[in-house]
Image (cartoon, rainbow, N blue to C red; front, side, top):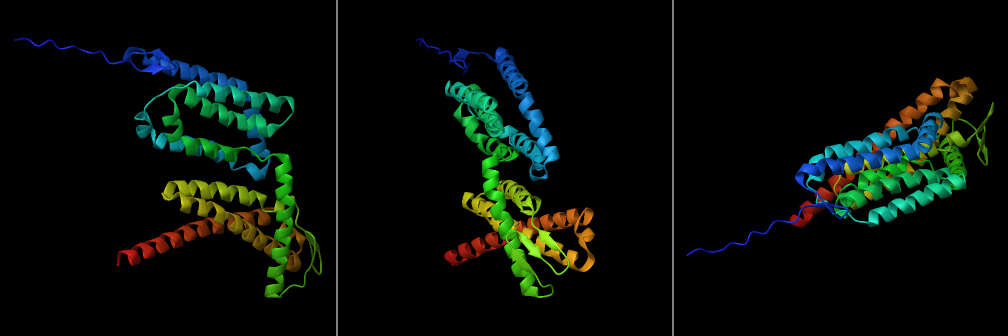
Length: 305
């Protein structure tokens, strides 16, 4: 007795609705390559000016590290990403068109922020268009991290910098009064010393260390911590660390100026102070995370007991 067996040919995988076979996988990579080339060509003027700003503006020099770090995260998880189900969707095309609209508005209105941030939307939209939500979700953090390479819009930058200048000068004055070795009088962002009036200018506001430390806290938390709550706490903790460390730097500058003259607070020594403070801030980041990890282990041990 023979039993007829119906063989069902499985549906072939598709890309944007077009069936493909294993032999035509190359066409999918070709489509991705053409889309990548089109994005690079379209955004070349935006990217070239962005790189120039990273080079000339110390506040955003960390931008040189953002893109390589995001690329490293994708490369590190490449085996896991290859196993993610590909489900292309037309919603990605909608996101691409919306992002290109932002680029157009930014170019017409000379708004650099919109033009630059639209690039991240195009990247996310391209992944969604070619591979769908699963891959976009799997690469959400590397794509989000790219936001840190985009300088803040001018209006927001101005709203942040001046309060930081006032906080740095006020806190530095309090520290100088606490150690009580140099008489100081503060007027706004001016520190009046016996032999010199030190002005906490925009470059000394701490915005540079704040943006760099926020990027560092975000990257460090993602790499070494699994709890999202702890990751958020580490990033938020970098705000007071940046403010206090910058105030300590201003205090050090005031002491050097008072005892050794203004030339000791400029040039290489001033730059060296910044590096020392940044390294100390990195150590504090690791110490804060260590304290949180120890506290968490203690709480778990007490509950288990």
